[in-house]
Image 1 (tube, rainbow, N blue to C red):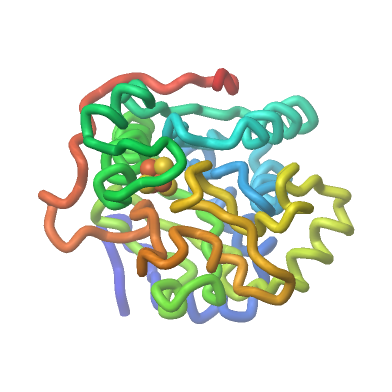
Image 2 (cartoon, rainbow, N blue to C red):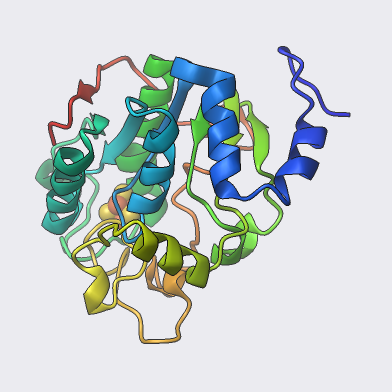
Length: 259
Ligand code: SF4
């Protein structure tokens, strides 16, 4: 039996969640953690799905959005549309770097390409998210990863203790297939990201090194950091040592969806 300080029996919960279905897991998380539950969203291709599940049970749940400085304009449009449609409680955490200055200071000469993806993700993506989690200090965090997205995600459990964020990480969508997602989106009339129709099935930052459209039938995640060997931005990874976590100096986020 795996327990943590507040004695949740994680092993028993995971066994139950394998057959519970994503909506039941979200319902359980909302009841269990109340206001101390947050969720993260990239406002990417199919992000409306987890947002919809979460607000069904916690209408005012805090949604953490990380602004790297290099997102597609369409992502902000999508965020604003969803925010207005569902009255979302979005907390935006921005990179501390000026996007243009970062490129010249780090020796990146082409705005449409990153030579050092890990360095850019560390300070522009991981640092703002780490700061958000430190500021908000939730007891649990809902995230939208799925087992069929990457080898690194195949072994994930529905509820895990995150020592990096000092909270439970809850992944209700782990077993969802693309077909399941399509039917949920259709049933609830949820919008996809505006670039989805153009083949962007997994959407992060706008440099071509980081996000590109894929062909029909291709693995949706193959458009992320294509050819680099990288498959995770780092938010869903527990660093091997504390020194791998970028520093999280306090700087408040922006409640209410300012982007
Ligand atoms: S996805 Fe690309 S542009 Fe975005 S933070 Fe990572 S390396 Fe930088």
